[in-house]
Length: 486
Image 1 (cartoon, rainbow, N blue to C red):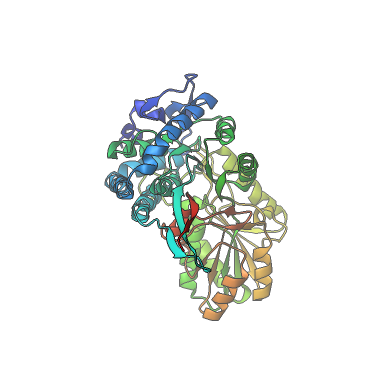
Image 2 (image 1 turned 90 degrees about the horizontal axis):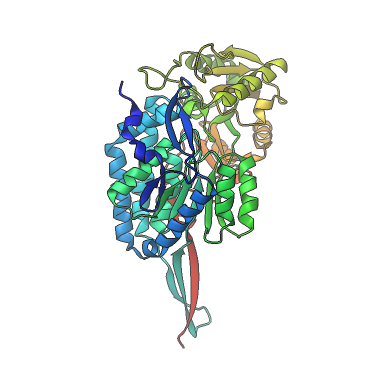
């Protein structure tokens, strides 16, 4: 097995700022580890505030030229990025697996998903429209002109190291904005590889800058405090999102926030159980459960609870665990030791409060950050795992007897990102769609992510939408001109 990091030459493990790949000003570096082994796989530049501001200098200088670039040209460069990612998908997927831990099949799916954002927004780039109309009282005309908001700062998470960056960079470039991306410290290699691809297809210097750092707080704070930054987009925890929103308020920045989730998956007695189990497996185990849209709480109507639980537990118990690059592996390593420790504590807490473990429930010995697929039943309402993101392969199952009961429980959370409902009754599905306090809903399916659909939550799960036509609007300001014309 060749080393997937070979696709990223040492000179491209530096900071991408303007037209150069450069070391951090301090010369500092930090290690990137394979979570399945704990071994260092690469050293990358560790930026400080000086480097972050240098990236903002580059983005600011490139802004006017990129905004003036014809939409068709911007579209062609995004299409070229899509094609390059597709052609090199195996290289990118192996790199994702090595630094993040997910199985190779999952990484391949992420590359396809991430690349699609470039194709979608290549199409949107040439469809940015204003309007021209007669004022209702006559005497003048109303002209609206969309304009790019300006240099954007992106803070992306480790769980989808390609797709979460693509979901931000593609619409920003389509709208005419320049970008600075600060990827997660655990998974910087994939974003650096994307920057290299975009350089190769001809995206101009300064349009896509990447700053890797272990000093995220200092670097991002400095960028948000600088008046040249006009937009912040963040994907990550609600706790960090609140901090960034406070900082963004000082300069009244445009913000997009895709924050935490606590998704309820509801299985009604009238559901097709084959469909429900397949959907629950996807909603729970996609990306090893390390996803903000993962099913965090599984509510099953009492009359089908026993059958659903037995079949679901059998499916979970049959999943194989191992290094994501090995053949036949279904569940790879979690991102780091704190993630495993958190999950172990949540399971122990639930058991102490009366829950029973049907499958899994004990972390294995040996190297790497692994936790087995786990199913718990009789999980009490006060178990900590029902109030926080599990972010791993653990599925608590709770029974319910009425729609009103389960709606109350499902909505009893500060989060509102996504929900899932399985039922064969259309009217019942629509009642859940109207009653659940979520920004997104999967009805009889466990996979909802699609670049052509608006992704985003309500309550403390976020602000704004990513993907779809709405996604490009997040990067456009609107100028209104009143034109005298009797």
